[in-house]
Image 1 (cartoon, helix red, strand yellow):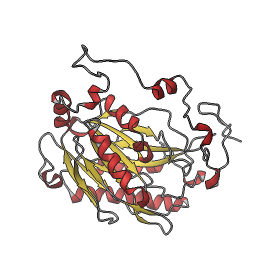
Image 2 (tube, rainbow, N blue to C red):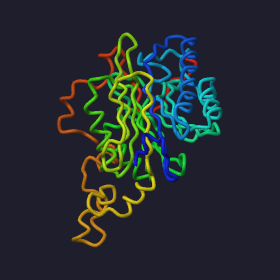
Image 3 (cartoon, one colour):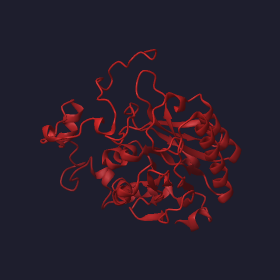
Image 4 (cartoon, one colour):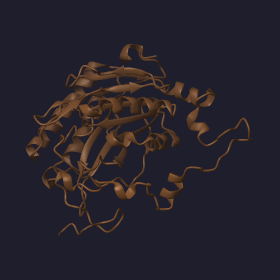
Length: 338
């Protein structure tokens, strides 16, 4: 099915390239401009590397690095030069691209944003990371849900970011909304390697969905990112895996959304995304369609609380140098002029 990494593309296939981009240091607007140009160059490299490639995917933090710097001078806007450069790169190379920016949020903390841009330069997907990697990341939690779009060659495509993928509900939500291919971009470092691998596989298998996942790679002199580009088939098997840790390597594979659709329609045993909402359909007509999960009903009612809630030691970012927040989610932000 892999077609030699996409070299032998089928008419129903989507060829994905995962860029294990070298981890940068970005401290100034000049650094930001230089890293933007580097990503543009790597987009062109992806096209030269494989003429069959439909979608090139850059990791989270590809533009800003892992410093967690919220300096307004290096935050992006959707109408800024960085996004415009990525749009033009997709046009120039006739390729879809997935990119990462930290977006200014007047009056609040910046958003960690993922973008998917089509080969005509149109932003087709805009996603704000819903689960920042607390207590390390300062980003405002996303408020727009998980969008699903029509991607290259008609695939249903979604995007989550890094820590999002540790919550099975995120992949389930993407699949429930129709995603056949889910991207997961990340900046993870080596201690997360094992959990990265098995969650990528479980997110695929539990939802009969292809997952395509990639981290930053190499060292910025402080942090060491692991690369680990990884494409998993809908049965949880690994189609392609970047295990070398080589920075700027592009991991490629062809995936088949048509076979995802076939499995979702035809599988009986382990069709978990369907069976979740139709429990025990052998015994009762249509299966049980209630919600027996306390954590779901409590969360929906605004009363989510763990039995050990009062024992949790870390509940803000003060251990990592961030001030304790005072504003509730959804509450009014500070005036941008303050």
